[in-house]
Image 1 (tube, one colour):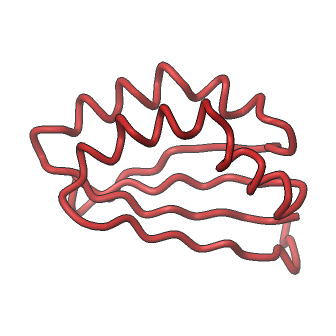
Image 2 (cartoon, rainbow, N blue to C red; image 1 turned 180 degrees about the horizontal axis):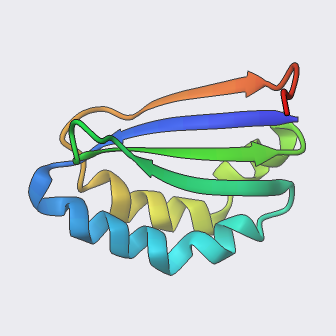
Length: 98
């Protein structure tokens, strides 16, 4: 399983616009082939910093999603709202502690 973490820093005046985009599209993202989990996190200290945290069955599933028309359309709208360049990490889940 692949864990994907993306840090998104928005202009403060664009926070509501981003939240609306995420709300509108989260169900379809969760239904993407290979996506098994998605959540949105917001920094407690800096409310314009968000993280998406998602689980994918494989790197191929994530790449297929990133190459989809749906992703390109959502990303086109989202990237206009940034204050800073997004950062992303793809991680292999090694262990789960319950």
